[in-house]
Image (cartoon, rainbow, N blue to C red; front, side):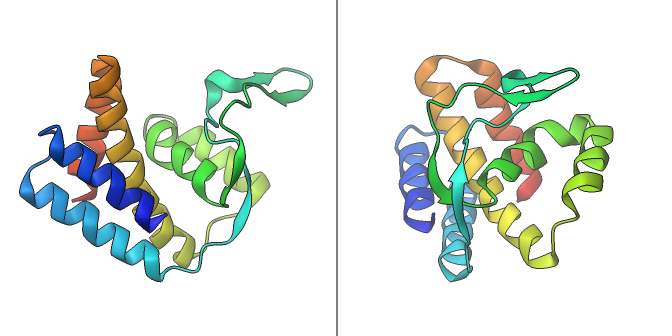
Length: 143
């Protein structure tokens, strides 16, 4: 995760999407992730409501990005992108899943930096102002 975050931080910097302070923050977050004990799991990597089919049963759709990764990657997307505007979903999730530990929250912060950097770069490359805006807003909040 640390090397991938450094890669995205460099891409964001090369595209002039980050300030020197923001780049320094992303690199510091990568350093913290390098020291973190990340548990592995099979992750969806686009785990959010648009890929859920909820009704009497629950299903997850769109597995094109699925691969082994850090266990908290799917939770990070929810934590940083979905739950800030839908705290009822966060409460319901934690009721069933359990609350993350303090160590998990530290890792989620580093994964938030990863989310911010990738959103900035992908949004910029795809001309997706909403995604770029999410990356910029999240990075500002984390800093």
